Length: 128
Image (tube, rainbow, N blue to C red):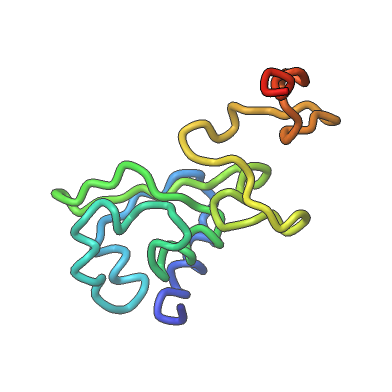
């Protein structure tokens, strides 16, 4: 991870919410060339288990978007700190991963609702 720590420091120092960079800019910031796999959009995904550099930008409070591997450009966008735990792993309070994916932020569970309880308490009586 030390290899990319300069990127994390650079992003933390940014005041604007969107930081557009070329791949050459990123290489200049980190001090060396990006790996060959950076030619593929998947390398720039915000999955924390993707690669070491992903963890750096997520931990700095950013996510990537508008990745253009043809033009070699990427935008790092500051993440809302309230919804950030899904970016870097399980909640530190519970140890569980919150709901995430395409439905992130769209699902709310009312306090007191037990999601493991059957929606129809009589469903099992069919087999008795």
